[in-house]
Image 1 (cartoon, rainbow, N blue to C red):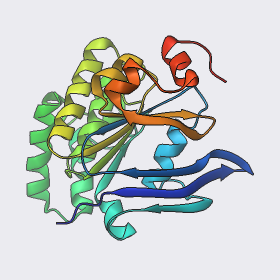
Image 2: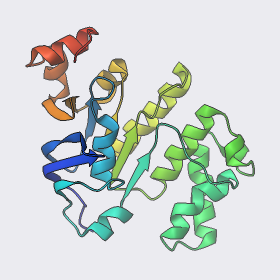
Image 3: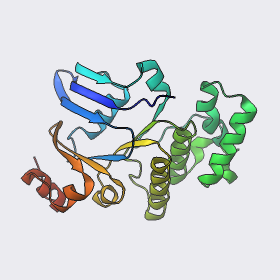
Length: 237
């Protein structure tokens, strides 16, 4: 099966009510690794992820996958900052993507139970998903996103408001998914997390890619004064 990547953005612009949220962006992302998008609040991190995933259509330019869009949509997943759950049981939430892909119910339920065990949700399978704690809900959202073994996972602040122990677990699942071949593109405000996870960094400022490169040289010596100021914790505007 051909991977959906690379993902290529060419002159991509996203606007809302005549205000430019992101762009223009020219960017190519290859088939492996973890790209972390950072930048000040309001810099367009979430909008960039949503534009790449297709949740919001570009106003100008293009977002192109290596396969037709319909095929690309089936082979990617998105985890929101505020996790979303169907008003069904945890198991029903887990198997929902598999059933959409035509997987028979017995096989889907077996896979749902297996991934629940990996994510510490085995004792919650019959529980209503909306009644889970915040950390459990995010674990469910990530497990549901990964159950189809997507080529690409977009994650928008996946550990926001989580405690340290839950954050460590989520990060472990993210790195394991990347190690198994899922391309991870995530936004975070947590520079410690960015340093721990990133292979590549995109630094956004005013909706534009201000700096981009491999993680280690970026964190050790950013090329622009704005990126350096941001990493110091200064206000960048």
